[in-house]
Image (cartoon, rainbow, N blue to C red; front, side, top):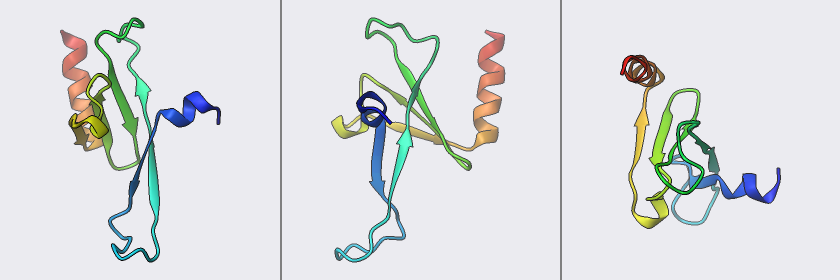
Length: 87
């Protein structure tokens, strides 16, 4: 993994880790920019697919800066893609 790839990872502590500094498990999301997003820093939608959840964010408003992240079930994501492709 190169530096650019590692900068696209978002690390967070697992809900199964204790809060008292004991055993901590961290998980990373690997974000991928939509092929429809412009390369000039314009509209950028990114997703981080996981087996049970598809995470969606706007790269102009990252979570660490207070931006929202949607967490969708894969079936919901597929339904959205089906509707979006009709437009």
